Structure formats: structure tokens, C-alpha cells
Image (cartoon, rainbow, N blue to C red; front, side, top):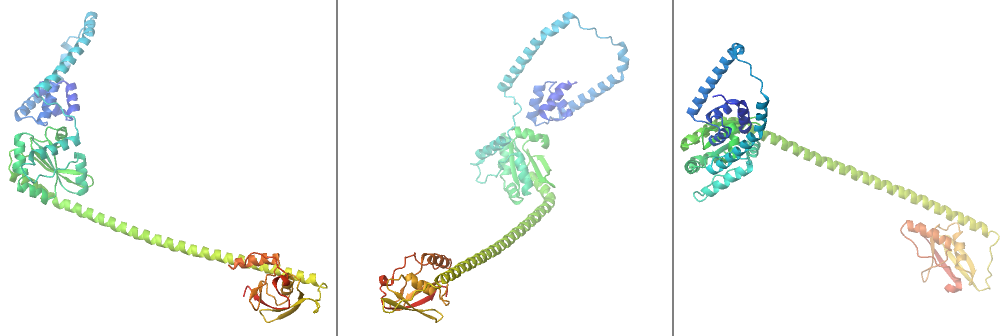
Length: 465
């Protein structure tokens, strides 16, 4: 039986198979695309032996016919009459029948869909990887939680995720496609819940992943696993960089636990040495990364300490430079103030030349003796009405007088307020720079107002001493 190539292409597009497999199912279903697709998903892509032999016979017969047609093509061209062109009436009838054919085709498809739904014939599932896995794990827990207290730990990741997990952790991946029939549940109870299977999974640290054979995910896996029946096991292992290889796969229907576990154990132990090499290489890479990370951390800590020391040194140098600059400015300003004091002293001396007044002793006078820090003395007589500022002038213009001073009486000890405003201002700035600012300015009084009417001993204190 020959099959239309368009049907073959549509079957290949739906089921993702090669040309030979598509023709096999279409021939088996007498060229009906819907039936062939349904049969493909029901059988997992496998047809029985008799159907396979029939397909091979039909395929051989089709090829012989094609070869004979090719060989006799030239001979037949001469004797086959040329097709007559379509007449206007035939053409109009063909055009008019197009809507009818489309309507009948749509009605047939709708009726076929409802018939499939009522009759219970399966249709290709929409693949929901996460939903299929969750549904299987949930169904497994519900069916067997009351029958055993040691349920198997199935991964709930999708197929792509569990492949990545297997490659990342360098653990073998055991895929189990479950047959949801009573025989499948019996297989789980007798084989997978047996001590031998449990010990194998725990001992070899396998990642166990399962899905139902009726799910869309199982249909998708059938393209790569090619199962011959269910339940079906497939053992996968990482091979090289980001590559997985299938170590063994087999149909476990009707098999005992020795067959299942021995097949898996032989495949595991045969490839375990290579997997251990990959694990050692991974451990070495991780150790190298840890050492590099530790060295990088130590380097960063050392660099941070060096930067902190450099910053501290710069800070100290900056503070030292600022202090030195401040001291230099302070000394310069002090020298400027002393220079101003010296100029004021010279100016006062010049102004007093020829204008000094002699106070007669018989008048109401006050005799004052001034004692300087260096031991020099000055005797001066003032009237009781004179201001103490005159005493300041006499003290200030003496050659032994310090630039910045205060005057005190001996007994009782009392500071004499005798400095003029200009001197108090200069002295205030000078002593403030040294942290010892004097009080506010007070206008000097007369000797009489201060209670000095006869004699007075004044001690001079150097403010910079």
C-alpha cells in the first residue's frame, strides 16, 4: 500500500519521527492520519511483530513497484494518451464543489473528535513537564503511603532540571516510566519497594525521577528512550562537559528484582570508575577555586591594610603639615603684633620727649615704685588725680618692660587696670592665640578712684614667661 507523502509529512510533524516510522504507522492504519497518530501515542511508538512484518512486506512491494515504474517510464510515455483539457462545465462543477468538500471535511473532523472523546480513544497530550511530574509524584504518594512507611524519594524537578542537577552533582539519574495499570502498581510494591532496590538507590546515591506512561512527558521521552513497554527504566550518567549518556535502559514488565537490580548494578559499577574520576576532578577544581578565593581574600585584606596604613600616614602627615603651617602663621602673627608693640613704644617715647611733667612732692602725689621681672626698677611720682593710664605709659616705655604684661600691687595683690584700649586689643589677640585670653576692656581710673593716695609698689608680670 502506498501512502500519500503529504500524510507522511503531517505525521512526522505531529509525532517527531523519521520517514520510515511515519509510513509504518500510516500503512498499519490504512492511511488514516488520526488513527495512526492515536496508535503512536497509545503504543509509545512501537508496533507488534506482525505489524512490523506487514510493514516490511508492503515497503518492499512499494519499492519494487517504484523501480518497475521508473524502468518502464520511457516506454509508457509513447502509448499513454495525453489527458484531455478540462472543459468549462467540468471546471465550473469543480469550483462549485469546493465549499461542499470543505464543509463535509469540517463536519467529519468534529464528529471524529467527539467519537474519540466518547469512545475513550486517547489523543496526543499537551506536554506540561512540571505538571506531569507533580501529578505522578502526588499519585505515587497517594497510592502507596498507606502500604509502606518508606516511600521512595522521587525528584519533583522537570526533566530538563533533573538533567542539570545530575550534571551539577555528578550523580547518576535513574528514570522510571510508570505503567499506571494494576500490574504497574504491583511492580512498584514487589520490586521498587523491595530491600534490594532500596539499598541500590541509597548505596549508589541515585537521583530517582519518574513519570506516568500516559503523560505527555512520557510521550516526549519515548523519542529518545524508545521503550518497548512499561514500566521502563533508563539509567543516565554525565559524560564530559555538559553531556549525558544513557548507560542502560530496559522494559521491566514481568521481571523480578534480581533482573532489575542486577542490570542497574552492572551498568553503574561499569561506569562508576569514570564517574569517580569526574568527581575527583570536580573536587580538585573546587579546592583550587577555594584556594584561589582564600588567596584573593587574603590579598584583598592585605591590600586594605596597606591602604589603611597609607591613608593613616597621609592623615598624620597632613595633620603635621597643618599644625606646622598653623604654628608658622601663629609665629608670624605674633611677630607682627610684637612689631606693632615696638612701633607703638617708639612712637610714645618720641611723643614724650620734651613734654614730661615733674610732679612736686608737696602736692597731693603718689609715689610709685615699679619692679620688672628682670630686676630693674622704676620710681615715678603721680598726682592722685592722674589716670592709671599714665602709669601704664611710664611702665610701657621702659627698656626692660616686656611686650605683653600685667601690673599687680604687692599687698593686697590686685591687678591694676591701666592699659589703654589699643594695647588691650593687641594683647587680647596675642593671648587668645596662646589659649589664655584676658577679660573685657575696662577704662582705667585715677589713682584717687582706685584708693592709691600715698605710695604704691607695682610688680610687672611677663605674660609670655
